Image (cartoon, rainbow, N blue to C red; front, side):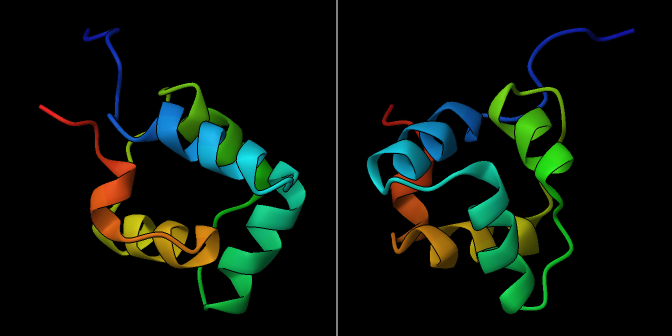
Length: 76
């Protein structure tokens, strides 16, 4: 069983959310307003890298955080 990180964007999502002064619940509502279905529990798991993130969820997270998609991904 693979117990390593399940995504690479979690730490950036957390940082950007905090910089924006948003709670996880607020971010979940912003994603829901775009038709997404990420609840606060899902977002906590994403931020802790315990959950995979679907491509459409990455797009909605970027939009909710007001950033380009590239901003969510670590630099090489």
